Length: 144
Image (tube, rainbow, N blue to C red):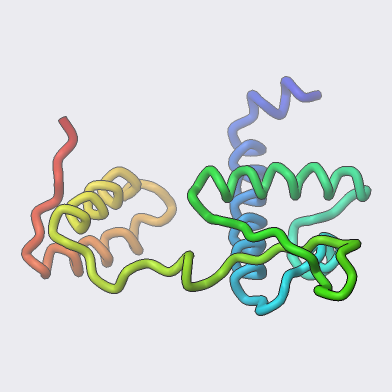
């Protein structure tokens, strides 16, 4: 069964899409909380965590690793300062926020990245953003 899943592009896209959605949901939940969220809160509130507790635990561990690989720092601390029996998780918004302004080289790199995904499902959105960048008189960087 696993080989069938690995070879079926439609199923892989769907699984990839579900994982991406879960990662976005997790990021937004951890950004939107002022206090640390426990795993049980995350599993209840964040869409995409289903199955047995063991399955949810494995998904959550992989998701944390994936977010950290993307450069998203997840803070881990005690959920309750009086009782250190359960840890919680959050992402501090001030650490995660992007700068308001980019220099011309950075905008060129963004334009290059948008050009690479222009033929994807996001094509219309990338074209609109690319027009905005080009209106700033920034030349896209071309790959070697």
